[in-house]
Figure 1 (cartoon, rainbow, N blue to C red):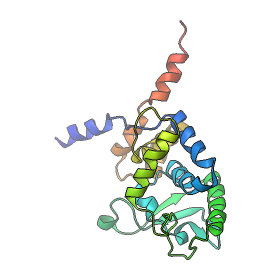
Figure 2: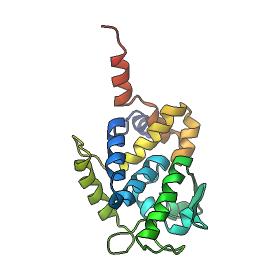
Figure 3: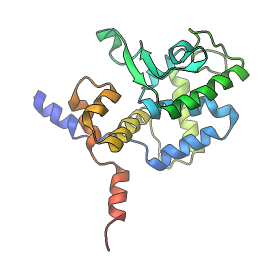
Figure 4: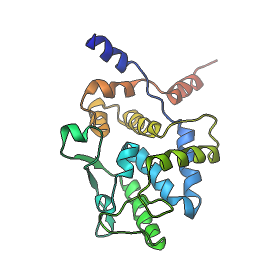
Amino acid sequence: MLAMANYADSTRTPRTLTEREQRALLKVTGEHRAGYRDHVLYAQALGTGLREHELVALSVGDVFRDDKPKRRLLLNVFKGAQRTGGTQEVLLSESLRGKLRRFHQWKVRERECLDSEGPLFVSRLGRRLSLRQVRHGFTVLQDRAGFERRVTFHMLRHSAVTNLYALTKDIRLTQRFARHRSLVTTMVYTHPSEDDLVRAVEGLRC
């Protein structure tokens, strides 16, 4: 039964945002100064594969050292942390670190708390952003970005992992990026995406 379950898990393609949806989401949140917090939130989800509860748990000191973004994050809050303990490491790209530098300047202008233990993502009331607020905001911004369907925030993680596999075709590297304990879990990201199918069909002679 376990083998059958693993096979079923490895053949289920994860739902992701299309490339157009990813571009539209980052564009609409990056256009206005007031939306920069959300722009960085979504960019970090797409650039690291962090889950929504891992993102909202980040504090300023987790991401910045001496007002500069770190190269590697050490997560204390992550899926399975209560069971396994310890930390997990996440690598930040130079592109994402550039956005984080601008985000630090944005937080200074907005007079947000920059203490090490202060929340990285802050609500309008000055508190740590909640999962409910993240999900509601994501729904609103999908409409503004012109999405033709409703997607979940977790699909940003699926998109990040799928994007990395598409770039590298390296299943072990993708497993490390996704922080999966089992390679079987990562194997679902090796299946062709809708964008892959579109590109293949467009290349057909007819």
